[in-house]
Image 1: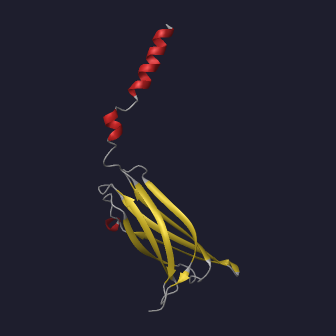
Image 2: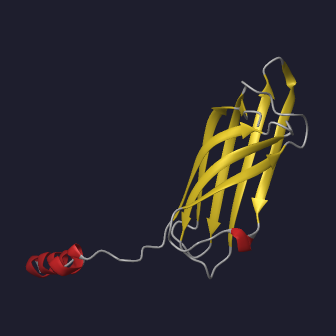
Length: 150
């Protein structure tokens, strides 16, 4: 009886191991979703807008997908004043072909103008139904800087 249990456990463990050919040739087309945030710069002409650099990678073009960026900034001198805005990119504009993509997303404050030199929290989410994981997010605290005047 004990020999049968041991053989069953060993056989079960061995069937889960990859052959050398499988180990050397990983899945050539992994389905992935990744997003990373870059800098955020206040628009020189419209201080209620901030330009956020976003890099992403997704690979399921046939499924539903979206890219959403939000920015929140508290006024360091007035705790009751918060600038907040978010922007969602249309599904047709989110390219999911397995290659790294870079976008600059404009986020309009829904409340007050962005404050140069003050910290803000940036959040970006890429949803890519059918991929693993089906969504990815990144969040960062950055200091908003004004754009140079042209």
